[in-house]
Length: 94
Image (cartoon, rainbow, N blue to C red):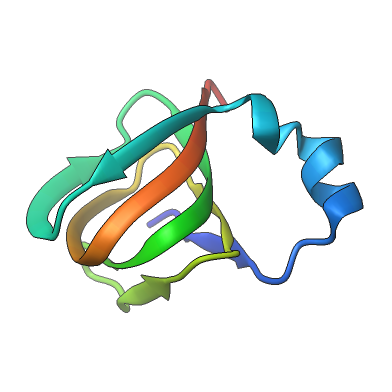
């Protein structure tokens, strides 16, 4: 099973290197839903809120503001948005 990668406390230089400011923004109210990454990966930078992502057959990962997260292609998971979420995101084919 592909693993979720979390990088905490990004420097301004790292955010600029990744180009995060130019990514789309998505927000979501508190709720639970299934989210599978069948055909592409998603790179996210959390601006507000909190989510708990539980991969099928894996350990839950809590993601909070300031976290840079890679949800890899092939990840199947349940998402629990525990605080209203706002994030930058970019989809990639890798």
